[in-house]
Amino acid sequence: MLRIFIIGFGLLLHASALANHSGQHLYDQNCATCHGFNGSGGVGVPLSLPAFLDSVSDNYLVKTIRHGRPGRIMPAFKALQDEEVNAIVAHIRSWSDKPAPIYTDKSVQGDATKGKELFAAHCAICHGADGQGGPGTGVTMSRPRSLPILAPALNNSGFLASASDEMIKHTLMEGREGTPMVSFLNDGLSEQDINDLVAHVRSYEKQAGSSSMAPVEDEPSILVSESPYSVEETVDNLVNAVESMNFRLIRIQDLESGVVEEGKEDKGQVIIYSCNFSLLNEALKIDPRIGLFLPCRVTVFQHGDKVLIMAANPKKMSDVFNNRELESVCRDMKQVYLDMIDEALF
Image (cartoon, rainbow, N blue to C red; front, top):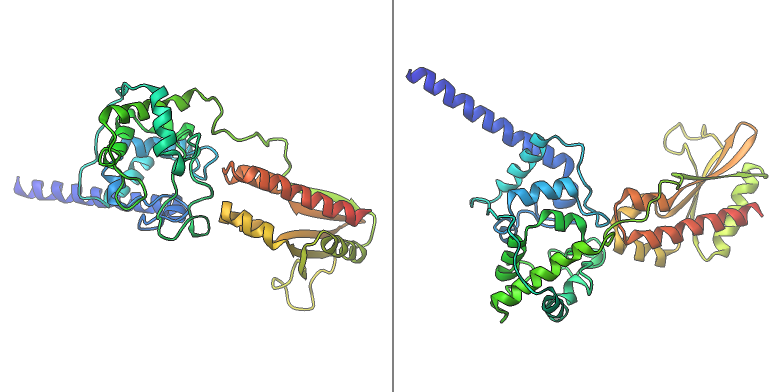
């Protein structure tokens, strides 16, 4: 009997170890790029912050993974299985030696009208007048180095679907040590004031589409135009267009450069790199991932008897990045590409 118990206990420990390993592996695959491998944060919020783990329930973490934050960087991980989501949550929870708080779905009773006034006085400076959150992604370029996180969007459908009234109230009462979020109870508000604030935050649910992004299903991934000129002439025309638009020409490069032996590159495939550094700086503040398609790159490609000009469509990329703030920037960048190509084809 003792031997059976020892074997059974050993199997349980082994299963637990596998579960933890699975959770860490899944976290590293899906979350670490934004939240850090040890949960210290970056583009995403610092998940290992004790005050964060002490105030959020496992249910909140599960729903956040499932719903994401539409238009606010955090995607919805719909392809993960329930057991995979639970394993990720267990791994995140392993950074704390305290049990997860448990909240009910009971609504907090407050006056949303009074809460709106209190929000304007105490919360809007960080969370925005309409609860839209701080600008940018929260990485160093878009926030002071002293802040580990920018204020999240409270009017976001993903947040409102994940956070219970009790959790929001707890956060307002206790604050989040290590972040700019203070305890409003210690700051002089009464519990009823805090209930009113919760009611106001919950009222954001009535603002249909407040966190949605404009659909871009009809946007092509690649902008393509046919040139009536040769590859060499098209490249020269693009260089002139770049300079006339006050962009800086960075370099002209064979597409196969560094891929094939030097001197054997296909001269019918050329990339023109250019940049407007003011635009680049502003775009990177909003979302550093935009660096994946910046500086501006236009490819001239000999395809049979045709010469094509191609560029990635920035407007499509704003949808891929799930960042509502990028919409206007990427729309403007798309127009820059179109104007550049049109001038080269004139």
